[in-house]
Amino acid sequence: MITVAIAFASLAVTRQADLPSGGQVISMMLARYNRLTSLTGNIKLLVQAKASTGSVGEEVDTVVQYQCPNKLYVRQDRGAPYSKTWVVSSDGARFSYNYPEGQGRHSVSSRLIEPVKDLDCAHIYAAASLSLGDRSAPLGIAISWTDELKRIAANWPTHNLAGEVEFEGLKVWKVIGKFTEMPNGPKVGDYYLIISKQGDLLEYGTQKKIATPLANNRVDTDHPTVLTQTWQVHLEPNGKPIPSLFTVVVQG
Image 1 (cartoon, helix red, strand yellow):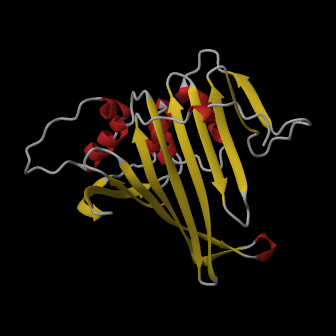
Image 2 (image 1 turned 180 degrees about the vertical axis):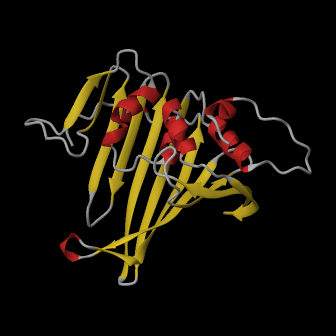
Image 3 (image 1 turned 30 degrees about the horizontal axis):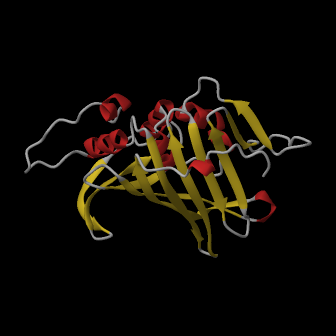
């Protein structure tokens, strides 16, 4: 099994001829993003829903950077036809984020602004993460908030090493397994992780079948829709952030 404790511990050295387990590779990846002083990068989510009647797609682009102890910037842009932008930003003194879905809009502003006080980057993200459009596993791993890592790990009850594969010209590890949508919940589909030999997360994908929605709130369970989500990940641990982005966004 994977635990956050394993992720934060030094991995045991194996003989060159031995292959790591899927859990060891995931733990190496989680440790890669732990206890950083800064991080920069971007994540692209590609969504495809394919049914017998056709397919539709969606993209969400995420830009993320942080500077410890308490400066954070996350921007997500969803493409047409349902374009929308979400921003979480902290200047070290205050942080702001979109009103979470389902809550009423303030008469003056569409954003919440709170004092940072003694919060660090991970806990600023914890306070604001439900307001984002794509609270993904790659983003949670990048931020390395312990409670989020526990949730992510619990949603991967199986984790098998598929072996060494080639990805964008590199020899990397591929881990495959079944995923759940809540800790200890039922397995709902398949996932895979592409992880570099240094522990960098390069790609994460999930696939599951869902009942095909029909008119008048009906669904077709006999001809399910295949929902595929792929996150293309480009993160730089201890990267150099753009200081001007650490500004509290008041409107938007």
